[in-house]
Amino acid sequence: MRIVVALGGNALLKRGEPMTAEAQHTNVRIAAAALADLARDHQIIVAHGNGPQVGLMALRSAAYAPDNPWPLDILGAETEGMIGYLIEQELMNALPKGTDCATLLTRVEVDPQDPAFDRPTKPIGPVYSAEEAEQARTKNNWSMVEETKGGLRRVVPSPLPIAILGIKPIRLLVEAGVCVVCAGGGGIPVVRGADGNMEGVEAVIDKDRTSALLAEALQADVLLMLTDVEAVFRDWGGPDQAAIGCVTPDALDAMSFAAGSMGPKITAACDFVRAGGTMAGIGRLQDARAIVEGRAGTQVRMDAMAAENRLSGEKNSARVAKHQPEAVQGLS
Image (tube, rainbow, N blue to C red; front, side):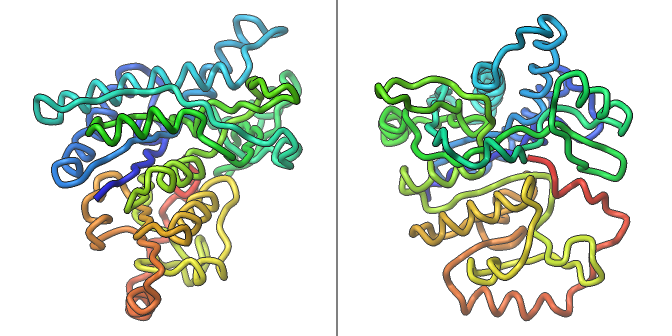
């Protein structure tokens, strides 16, 4: 099978860890081991998040030149190259000798009139205390959102991807059997001017929405979104909280999910399956193979009978412990 794997930003940075090169190397090495296991039996294309990293780059840029910070499209390109290098190197170390791997910077077109530019929702950077967040809001004119109790993050516009501009070379490499790392951080956001020329824009595209577009363009069988959450949960944080196993897009449409975290994953999963994909999976990195094989995580399929059978069985499943931090559904 051909599988597009979207790695969450937590594949590079665990919650509470310092944002250091050593920590990212260690976590990417762990991620590469799981991906290499999947690649033994399937063809994989790897995309990844960059929320923590692009936020760090923005902070460094603001500290160096507070009156003239680097724009988010350039910072996104920086993080795509940095993270892509880490993933490619560790994948090459984990995959059999003779495997070819390539990392591509990927421009993704967005609509300059997308309403997302007026409603920032994409969390980036570190978690701030209420006092730190207020200082950052005042100093930098940032929009902030509460992600955990008492913890806030900066949010930036997250327009919908329209087209992956480099899809032809990506497809050529994939058809040649190359393991491609691309569309990192949702891709570098660009808009088309009246003269047809492209230019970067201040935004961070949701990686899951771009990954769904990538999976459709490459006619992938599976879209696999890996994070640090074991599955999608119904009634998250409520009295009936429970993990969802196999489910249809229509069933998910009747539920609600956080706009800045799990919501985009659900939308991406439903869009991909409705466009003809066999399955979209959401779950933990270490469960990658089990999710693909239907033994773990949440699997979104058009097969209503299979989904309904799994859902009916879940009604009697044990409730998830309430001490789990709510923020685990917020990493991207």
